[in-house]
Length: 166
Image (cartoon, rainbow, N blue to C red; front, side):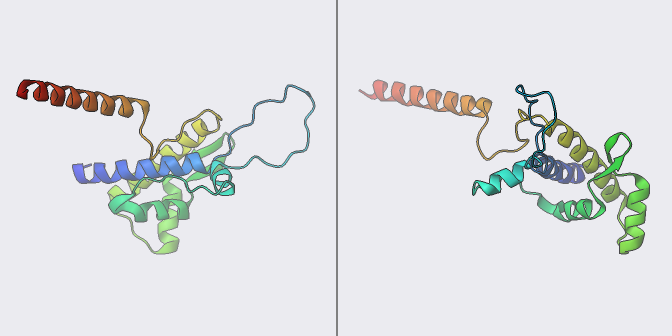
């Protein structure tokens, strides 16, 4: 895969991972008060929870390949099998192409299949209530530290240049 396609894939991967995280309902911790199962409403997905709180989830820009995310969700980002959720199979992609009349280029088909793997893996990780979002508008602690160091260095340099003038 060339550099252009690799860049397109990275943008799409960020979107698909964020969608998987948002569309997953974290597994609630086991109840400590009772050992017998109780009837409860199904847990809300993170997206449902954010919407119920009036929040809009952060989403990365899908870039030039955004149409592939639409295709992925048309096919179905995952399949159900006897072992749980699995990535889409080549046969599913082939059937989808035949039914829709869309002929994917080789790189598009490979990208869709890889995005399905990414969705499936992130969905599994996102079952943990402690799983952080794959994408955020807010800087990470490492990014904040880097900015703080740059500001500190700039201020130190500015202070030293003012002392030298006086």
